[in-house]
Image (cartoon, rainbow, N blue to C red; front, top):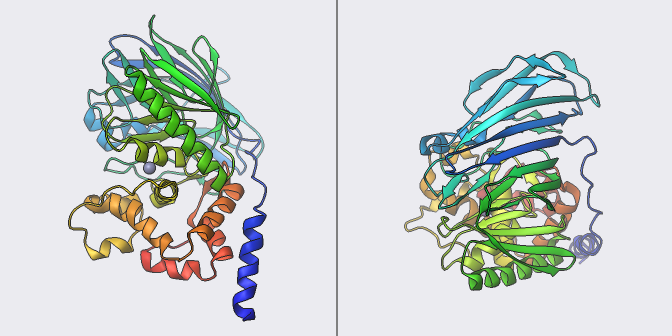
Length: 428
Ligand SMILES: [Zn+2]
């Protein structure tokens, strides 16, 4: 009896008293960004300054230029960066591949010292509509579109190769962004961050920025201290439905995994996006179609699993996609419909990196989203999984989490969880 009772009591106490949520690091990067948007939206340009404070010695900086990943480059995106300067002095740069910009500093930057660098940038926009950068009639939508520092305070610079399929590969530390957007008359900018007026946005402890510009109308409502907004170019009725769905998802997820971390949450319904969603900190793009509730539940769950608790999306894509899908199913949304003819072995690679899914692209969605949720269900106690997730969110808030961080919390509330998940290809 005692053998059952002690783990039960440990799990009960762990769930009743989750640890306090970690605060963002004081030494996080601080970005100042200008974006100039002009018709006919074939490109956007601006400047970027960033102050970086390492927590371990480094003699170079690494920026990732994700619009230059293989599928986006093929579709017509391209991010070009001008000269990089620091204190008015031009720095040498290296470009080992299209998504990587290395800035050797010629000296070692000691922990807790800082450097501020400036550059200009220009982004060419593709004419396709299924990825993270697109233009549409009288507007555009952008995400992961700027040079971003790829620093993980636990691992140093991250130089994972970009995925070759339509999926994210980025991992960036939580940072502060001060964003100024200049738009053509009559159009409205909607972006990650608090809107301060006149195209000025300020975002606190976020790992990326999203921006949409267009003839948007905005509906908003308060939900538990958070301003929830929906920006849409037409069809007021759809915006109202989306607003109600977003409020419900936000409240239900907060009650399971802890409070939403920011003061505003925005859904953008761009006119071009098919029935999919794309998540960014404080903002999700939502496509049109019959899976609207599922998409809103899924993308809103990413505000906990990706936005607040980050992960290396190239090495551990399951950490955010399995957990966002889990969150969506816990709200009562179905899983995404599985593809036809899934092979039995597809259940055994949940923890595989994007370099594996590049070669098994047909089963990527099933293997990471669907099989990941099946793996967590197989532990036999959905409420205990939620409890472990709440603890994981609290401990790893604002950081780049690793599989071992999640397994530690699962082991605490479900003894033997890590051993049982090995059969699904999940390892620390
Ligand atoms: Zn997702």
